[in-house]
Length: 419
Ligand code: HBI
Ligand code: FE
Image (cartoon, rainbow, N blue to C red):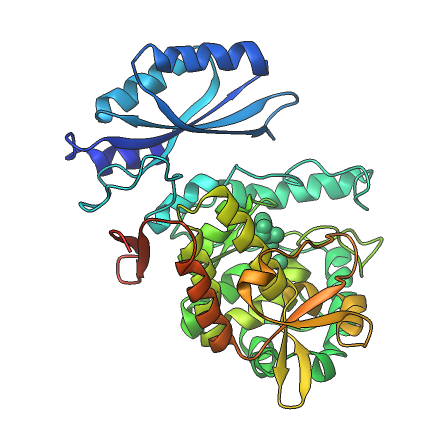
């Protein structure tokens, strides 16, 4: 079933409450064409609650627009989509909150968020960068073979739907060699630099998931393993998602993972996430129950959050899940995936060079950070449980007028009216 059909199906019996809808369309000429589209919606006496735009990855000079509005009923949603069709490319209804739950009278300004696991299917082609094109300073930018290979692999993510097994990739000899170089280098450092949770899980990944220098583990196998450990699953992704989409996934215990590998010319460098980063850095921690709870807590806080709060939560994510360090006995160890997958920074973060501060989310959320250099500051967590408690406290201080709970039986989000 398409996202649009799914949406319409869900809303079929709720004609009285307004149908909060997000519609996505792409257009070529930003100014004039957008005006026409908005005029078409306005002509139906519908007021928009939010517009998001970004350069499209589908063709040069296209723009993607995500427009939120309240329709009176499902028929009106259909009419809006129909009126946009001659004016824009690729019109589709990507989601709606209307009617998903009886207690869903959310404030109008609430950004759309996924309510069911299946709603994550709408993120597939909303990639920010590195989806299909590569930046000019990417080590693989001028390598046509590499670019074609990436396109082949990201096609899996582009067409993946919730509930399907993740198709296996038959990695080439060159790709496995790159993986082996990273694997050997990092596993040599884990015993002295990684936190105990990471070290506890790593042998299990070797036994159960085919971890080792001679093959790149398959996302599908790893996802099933994580599901058994903590309920976390992996979803293939084409490249970077927006912070909002990426964090929203965590609310469902879903981690969006790339499936391609960095360019072979620089095995110890990558400007973006790749399988080495995901499998060696992130995956081991998602097998830990306390860390899984902690990560989901950030995800739940991100659902329907304001743009400002998303920024704050993304910063907290950055200084924990990516670049977190923790106290273990009289030592400090790394648990952030950005550290655990970087030979240089793993050494540096535990040296006496960077500044180390206590993990206090309200302060962490304000911290500026470089993305292309080693971090000048790290925050040390006392434990994942303690960090989760602090994030929950922080989330309660955010200005969201409702709270949410994840129902694991139905794989859906329940809205707990006002808090
Ligand atoms: N998208 N695919 C993907 N992987 C990430 O690790 C990722 C992302 N988008 C944003 C992001 N990370 C973070 O830096 C925070 O903004 C959440
Ligand atoms: Fe990461």
